[in-house]
Image 1 (cartoon, rainbow, N blue to C red):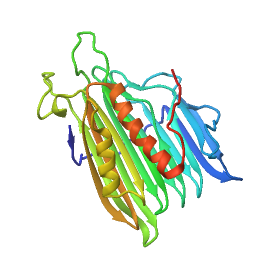
Image 2: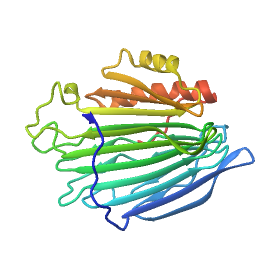
Image 3: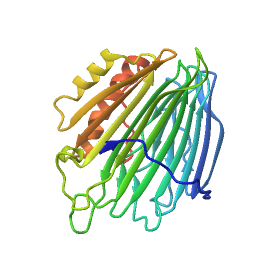
Image 4: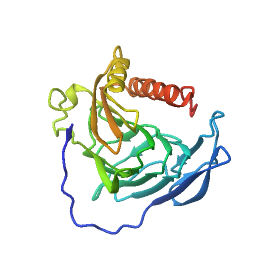
Length: 294
């Protein structure tokens, strides 16, 4: 596992296999979709309100069931001033064999003043001979609140080998606009490249011998070193290896990145769930999430 800048080739125009546009606004104490559009192999289920906070929950569905070679999925999500969105998926994102070209997801996230987004998809599973790129462009305001959690796991292989996917590239570019910054200013560039060794050997130098990766990204004016220390302490006792880092502060808002390595999807979900539960209760007075998808 490495974090590095990756050179990209010339841009190629590809028609999306699936497309989703969603614009959430606040109306009478509730968050609602003012605009929604989907086509191709992406759908969105009807909205749910899981408590009395007014936060709206939408579930993204891929009827095709998986990403294949040369597939492109494009998502554009905007949360307007004062609005509150919980966005999740119906099931795991599965990337199967991608002969000839990688599968790709491009997501644009924009948060207004006082807007909040919790992006909590099910795990990303990369199967044998899979190559996948995920590019997320995020723009927040100084008073926005963003929480993103993700688990990456290798898929089942017929020969029982631990790793058979080729490459995963996960890139998050976060910018802050407003406040003392007339133009959007880079807060963080989180660029993760996972390329398993060809000989299928794990150990020091490749994910420290673990097979699964969990990530938590938080951007909020209330992020500080004390919170980072508390979240790190919360991960103690779990069967995982966890580290946390902070970004610089731009216009009063700061980012936090947590990475956790384990051999269990369930263990990583428990770690990320405990962290998001702490933030939900402390910052918003909400109960821990129980989406009950299964």
